[in-house]
Structures are given as structure tokens and as C-alpha cells.
Length: 288
Ligand SMILES: [Zn+2]
Image 1 (cartoon, rainbow, N blue to C red):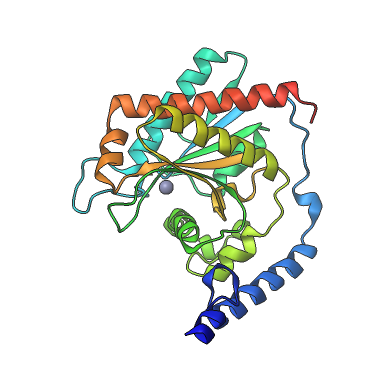
Image 2 (cartoon, protein in one colour):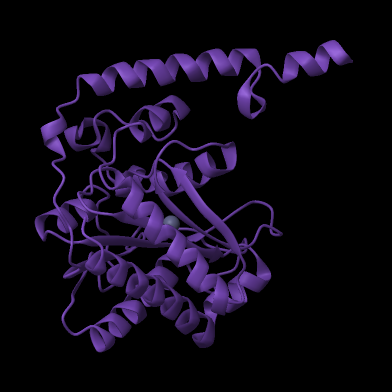
């Protein structure tokens, strides 16, 4: 028994020997690949003022996102994300008239995954916020999570990224699209390699993520599950602090009810706004 325990504890995060070998070989291949990636591709812009914010309503059009309770057509993830983005945008426009708010979509249309960060980069956005709803086969799973780009530390975080990244499969040409660098949504190794790409704005994204979880956690009925890291295609090539908010589980009856309500949506939008406000005042007061 002791031997068995000792063997099991030899690798971090409860990995078995085979999985550990696979994980670390992928890690080192990724690290070597990174050495050859042109750093100039993602030049770091000094962002000491928040002037433009891009709000990204997840999914849209044919890609409905998570459908919630099986068989129910009460509402879809793509509808909640759009409504939350529009509510949040309205609050920013009202309370921060000096800030330009741009949307990757303002209606039920499909927007390719590469185009979302591309749109933010083209417009020299100072923040990129992607809004989503979580889903799980276990209806008891509930709560909000805010992600920034990085290597997942557990399978649960990887599963969230895999589910969101599966949106790529709605793009018929994704396998041949150079913009995705051969990314395979079904391969865990592919997720690991691309999540290792250096993100110049990691600390800023972490700060904003923490503000979102703290502020929404204070006022929302949906409990915070904290700040997490995983490799999301939508955050991959952004050249500004960028986060992905999983506002709640559409598959959990309580979260779902809250996400369906006017009160719930306003509270979540206000929580994210408060986080932006805190972040903006931090950045504009602190020399970067
Ligand atoms: Zn989503």
C-alpha cells in the first residue's frame, strides 16, 4: 500500500507515469518550439490608459454554445453572452464616456475565432473581455470562473478550454487556416503547446481576472470558483490584457435561473463593470 502510494505521488497533479512522460515531453517540445517563435510577432504595447475596450460575446449564429439543460430550448449560451456584453457595454458607455466600447458582435451572427482577437488588435484595444457561460455533464457544478491565457493545472480547466475551443469546428477551413498554426481541438498536446506561448500581458490579465471574480462575487448570487488559467484560442493572439469570463453554469438549475433573469444579468454586468473600473484606476494611477 505504501509502495503504491509512494509511486502515485511521484508525479505532480496526480499524473500516472505514462501521462507524466507524455505531458513533460509535450512541455519540452513546446518550450523548444517557443524558442523559435518570432518574439516580434507579439510586440508589447505600453498600456497606461484604458481608452478602448473590446467586448466579445461568445459564440453566435450557427454556433449556439452550450444549450443548458438537455432537451430544453429555454435559452442558449450565445443568447446570454450577447445580452451580457450589450448590458456591460451600455454601463461602460454611460459611466465612462471617455472610453470607446467595441463589440465583436452586436447581433446573432457567427464571428470566426481568429477574427475576435484580430478585431481587438486592429482597433488597438486596451482590454479584451470574452463573455461565456460554463457547462458540465454534472448539473451540480456551479459558479463563475475567470480565465487568462496560460497552461491549465488540472483536467477541469482543460475541459473548459476544449469545449470553448471546439467553436473552431464551425469553421470549415480551420485545419488549413495558417492563423491557427495547425491547432487540433481534439488533442490535449495541442492545447498544451499553444498555451505555453508567452503572453506579454499575463500579469495585467491576472489582475483584471481577480477583480472580476472579487467584484462579481460580492454582488452576484453565483459563487466565485476563482481565477484560472487555460489555453483559449480566443485569447491566444490578443496584444492587450485579455480575459475570458465563464459567468455561470448554464447546466446548473440555480445558475441557469439567475443567468436567465434580468436581475442576474444586470448584477453580473455591474460586477464586471466594477472590475474594469478598479483595473482602469489601477493602471492610470500606476506607472507601467
Ligand atoms: Zn462559450
